[in-house]
Each structure stands twice: as C-alpha cells, then as structure tokens.
Length: 249
Image 1 (tube, rainbow, N blue to C red):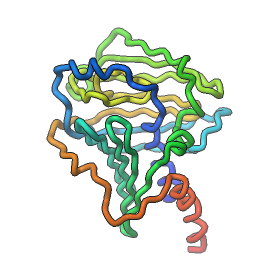
Image 2 (image 1 turned 90 degrees about the vertical axis):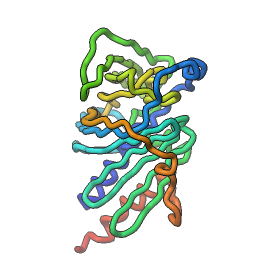
Image 3 (image 1 turned 180 degrees about the vertical axis):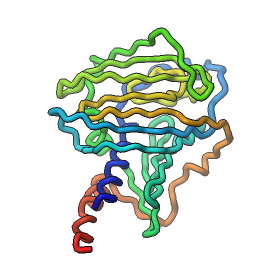
Image 4 (image 1 turned 120 degrees about the vertical axis):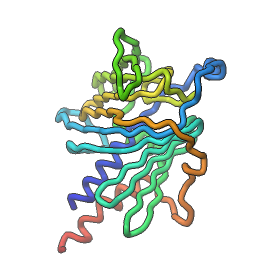
C-alpha cells in the first residue's frame, strides 16, 4: 500500500507542469531571438513539504524528496524519474499540444494520457488562478547555479478559492528554448534552474544539480508502441484500488 500511495504522490507532483498558463503573446520576439536553442538534459532535486490548510485540491501529497532528469530540445520536454523499480516519464510538446505519461516496471508498461478536463482537474494549483491577479516582476540580484548565472523573477497571484500564491524562479537567459512556457511565467526568456511553488497546500522546490548540453532527437520523445492508453482518471482509480487487491498479503 505504501508504495502505491507513494506512486500516486509522485505522479501527482509531476502534474505541476500542467498548470494552465495564459496564451503566449511573444511568438514574434521568439522568431527574432538569436540565442542558441538549448538541447540536453538537466538533473533536478525536488522536495515537497505539506502545509495543512483549508485548500481543497484533488491531488493530495505527503512530504517526500524526488530526483529526476528533464530532457529538452526545440520541440519536446521529457521528465524521467525512477522510483523503487518504477520508471515514470512525462512528455509534453513545447507548444503544449501533447501530454502523456508512461510508467514502466517489471509488471509491464502503462501509458496515461490526460484529457483537457483532467489537465484542469488534477493541476496542483488550488483550483484555477485568477489570471487578472497575476503580477510578475523581475528583481535585482544574481545567483550562480551549477556555474550558470541566473536572474530572479517573482510571480504573485490569487486562486479562485482566494489563496494567495507566490512563485519564485531563478532562470538562466543562456539556456533558452523558443516557445517553452514555464507555468505562470509565460514570458520567461530562459530555463529555470531553481523553482519554488506554494500552491496553498504544499511547498514544492526544484533545484538543478547538473546541466549537460547534448543533442536529443525527436525520436527520444516518441510514445511507446503496443501499449493501450488510459486516461488520468482511470489510472488514479487503478492505483487507489491496487492496495485492496493485495491487502491480505
């Protein structure tokens, strides 16, 4: 039971990237940007700390640490995490046109695709953000993260259930992918190497521990073949039912 519940937690925390972001309005600026496009892998350490309050999100997490790798090229991002014999991946299109997860273990592979409604229902932010409340500001100061010079940006917002949220990102302008949207920072011109997120129920912190520039082909992001996909709701129901099946062991 503990492993199953932990897996649900890990899958849920991955959904932070699903947080709905206002439409991008800087496509023309992206076309004119002459910076090299980043391709490679960034390793992250993540920590989740629960803060009990009156927030009512569908994703319920406990405290835990997480290690994962984020593979990126001009078209896709893929997060890969290994946990107790399980390999969990989340693949997204840079333009947010696709989203799917795969879970691989000794028992076989699963493919989970989130519908548009599920992307809204299972996001970690408490309900929906009032986009008129979003206020982003870049503040003075620089920080070195794994040898890369980063700038600090802060985003304040209010959710529909009246929770005030503040996100802090340290991003590197030298690590750049046109069209790549960081949740709630749609105009961020660089990849975040440190990202703090308070969603009314948890504090989530990601810190980059290693950055490697390398060619990553589009084939690396392909869906596994021969696996019947299920929706996110079906997957979570399956995980919740699994402990009961083995409760007599």
